[in-house]
Length: 108
Image (cartoon, rainbow, N blue to C red; front, side):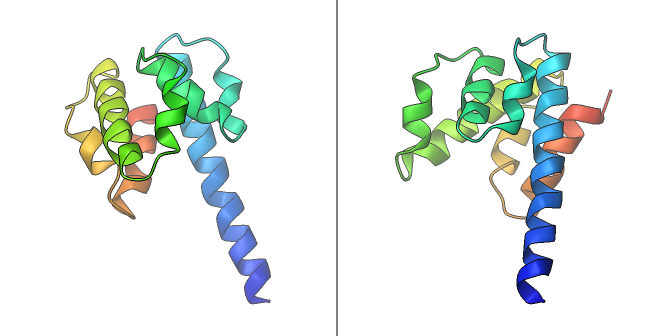
């Protein structure tokens, strides 16, 4: 029963994050917003939204470097959505970071 609950929670969060990323991509005019639903391709989509080269996916796979890269990408995405760039830093904080994608996607 605990495993079922964990799977349900994971699926709910995955759907929320993927849909938020898709909406962000659509609002920034980035092509292939459906990439948000596919692992690894969603990292490529993050790079494309932030106007970074696609090879930055490799940087997301390197421990510690990925934190810096995610902050840089997150700050650029926040700026593109007309929000303060410090949201890119807040995005990496556990729990709080779950709110940021929704805010960037659905706030005007």
